Length: 326
Image (tube, rainbow, N blue to C red; front, side, top):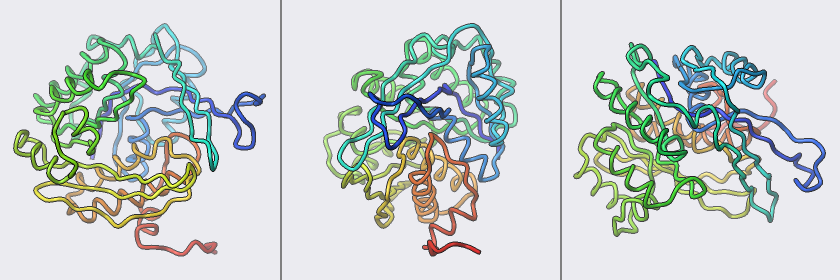
């Protein structure tokens, strides 16, 4: 299946695990972004993927393009232009201190992207799915207009659309995110949003996820699937995770306890696990359990994204032994 995603690819700088950021002399470099992370995982699962983005004309962009190619993510719709690469710092936590993110992405190449930079007639030709998230819409008014225009273009071409709410309080307000969410919900097929989005972005008065999804399904019958996770943070390194899938009824997986090394990008990998199952026509129980196992693997890997095979995910989903495979 061919999946197109629109979003920024950034450079992440993180302190070594054994050194606090204010004492670090060296920082680890990773490259990622919400939509791009989802594509990396989908590429590992055998899908044809293309990222639509803008990058500067420098060696950092060359590094990103090289890594994307290695992962199997297509870059032919990348706009190379003047400007800077978006950056953020992930100050990694420990057993008592949570991870903190500091953004340095203002005025990046992608932040200035407009609909005129991309030929969506060509980009969407032969595509099965278009994926984008609220992070892209949150950057500024220009990228908000770009996101909405791309969604409408995909819909007009008969392509399924996936939207991940991905609310980030450091990027926009609840009122702004909610207003945009209400604008796109009538236009999408698959919605990734949870109970907090339902309550605080859409102002639906319920504490029950199933009730919230039922209300949204009646209002937006175009949406075929809703999906989310329940995360219980015991400590920064111990999380409990469940996956929820709703079509006309809610299915929730059993809870999985995770020993977390790096949670950044875990939600993007969960999204790709769900989209993979939808694209392959699986039932919601299989989709949810596969997505949970997929996300669990990402939490054990450093960096923003996770290139993992279907066999590896299946082994985790089936409770494989952690003994060395010889």
